[in-house]
Length: 514
Ligand code: AHR
Image (cartoon, rainbow, N blue to C red; front, side, top):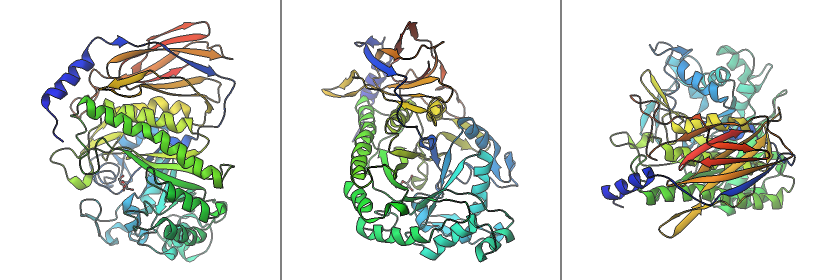
């Protein structure tokens, strides 16, 4: 599809006009009616051997002039620590089902090289392997989430990987680990059994995968006190047959989680559009393709409820985020795209959806952490920049392990050319200290939205907040201009007894502490 420059200009000018104010909406917050705990693992991340996510983005090697600790970039670790990231998924993605972990252990100079056939056909020298990844997790204070190879590996290979990492005692794999410099085992809970096995992970049918899953999961053992949380490769977007087949055929004691992947696509898989140059129509499609996540989570949960009414199996949204065309002139296999205020809205909406479904969604991982797809960080040589999406994670971290306060309200509509979507998304929680937080997004690029927050069973001592917004939705941060879009204190509210009236700026993400 061809975008005209005129359409882009009209959109930018419209977005910059003095905001119109829509009818105020009321959100009732019953602070004493909390439901499920919002798993902190909803705020997880994903790092694949893809483009410059691992190499350059995380791993620079011990001899690099870029400041590092045992080869891992110090600036990236510091930025991630600010977010208290709860878990990190690795090594893929599609790469996981081609990865043979034994190639990534032992002296680096002896590690075999392979071709990363999925991602640009580049040589993978295996210098970042199991020990390096688990060192990264220890430096971050985050839980590893390892995805094993079911597509092209073997039951034995996966079983030995678990033994190598987690067995404390004398065994062939534990001895090999010790020989490679790690005496004590690591604790690894989250264990994926293949990835997208309906596609890059082996092009399997749901029925065939369910049988394979049972074999692989059986031999991925619990050693000592280490208890695996086994995650089955799940469906894409609206493939309910996949979910039903897995839930029906796999005994619940073998499967703790079932993954779901849904990417926000503006057009289609062949033409995804630019990350920075888009018309309002394209922006509208992006928001629509994000909001449908709520339907997918609801409907997959409904299928799961039939077989698992006690909700023992978590829905693990371990790949989500925007997917645009790569930046011009970059390797198409590296999936490098810029990150604008539009991406920040996508992140804010998705995270509100996951919080709201805290009863079933137990882990989520944005794709991907550094330099790939909806990245929270970009690096180039020794430089690093935080993207608008980074700030959303920083604002939303207040929800981690907090008790969900259900929010029901009627959002005003964002209308474009006769089509409409709800403009506002919200989720709220009460943390362990008793503080109430609400996160809000306003997807309408033209209208400021007035909201009344009615607080029940709660008298706030004070109100504060942070806001992320931009004059234009396409604004983004670059190495030369790193602070174009960043969160700042939010002041656009008034506290009157039990009500806080809030004015959400057009195209904004807001976090309020009450
Ligand atoms: O995140 C990029 C790719 O998207 C992953 O490797 C794959 O699982 C998905 O299709």
